[in-house]
Image 1 (cartoon, one colour):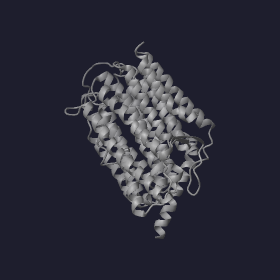
Image 2 (cartoon, rainbow, N blue to C red):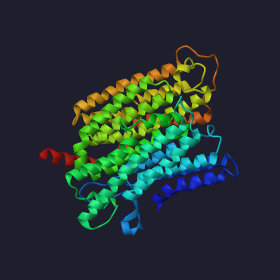
Image 3 (tube, one colour):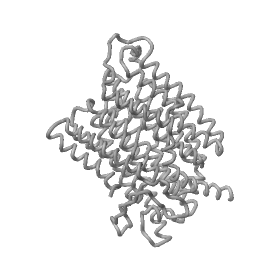
Image 4 (cartoon, rainbow, N blue to C red):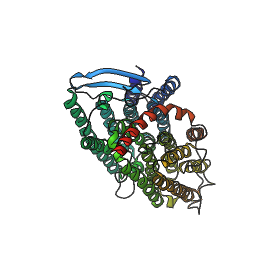
Length: 508
């Protein structure tokens, strides 16, 4: 029952937060912190005790480190089927950690409807854990859509007013329409896959293991793969369906930005690795060159748009588009080393982007602006915050000794053998990354001072959060082996699916 509890804990915690507001405005915060700490603790315990040499691989029924299965809607072959492997556990531990941080960073920022805020925050995280555990495709889609509504409320009710003509309601609606529309395309693809399998076998099922064996005509397989890719591409986000992201980040409260950059983008990469590639290996192998160019374009385009930003949160948002381009290249590279690099990059980006958004939130709290043109000259007038920001800007540009460097290095080295020119072009993103990261630090903290005010430095709660993240990034950069060992079997299985499909393409 440990897997259902991983999902139920955030949902129950959210309801308790909502009701707890009747007694005190502080009680929901403590309930939320306890809930997320429990989820994080359970994740660490599962990671420490699980056997992650077990993972799905082609030619055999999927085997899992942990599994839970109960009949749900028998007539349509829908089950509550949850399963855990190395990839899932890493994502769940990341979710638990960033969940704790998102509660802590909103401790002083959120002062109205505190209980309802934490209900939405907990339910987003519960939906995310459901996405990482659900193996039945109907259940996966259920959790995929479930994340959207609380995120909409989070941006619409507690977001910041943006620049002229860009309100938080507009940003929330744009986020919802983009992700809902692409999710419906995936629903059509899931139903089509189930019906095609039913016409071949006479068995109506949404079960992952059964659908892996579905026999699909090449044209059908390609269309269905595109249906899945459309949903994942929007959440990823892949250029040109990325335009919801900067607006959502700029208007979201700090906790919303932490969850959006740190976790929600990772659900898309997870979906590609878990579903799009194994279910449609031949179509994925055929589509790979397009995915590579989309990845390169995202890296360069995201970096160039980061240069142009004056809003510090929008700059960090566009840098996320750039960094996730590396993950897209790795997933479709056909290299196990690159795929393991993608997992490291997902975790490192989750940590560094979350830290940068927390620091942006602290800056906004003190300066009441996110416009870098109104900042400057505050390095000596704000203790701790500028120095910590410099570390995370350096981590985001891939400084050796941080997890981001390990992830990007493994991706480029792994992909170079199969797609050398793509790897060379992607490497230019590291150069651009250096420029926009240092421009951000220079504009915000150096140069002529706009005022002589002395600002409050980071409080002990905020300092513990960001120094903890810094420590984890350095640990991941110096000793990534536990993460690589945990993800090895899962990535090897996915690599085999893609590899056999590439060999068939070459043979044709």
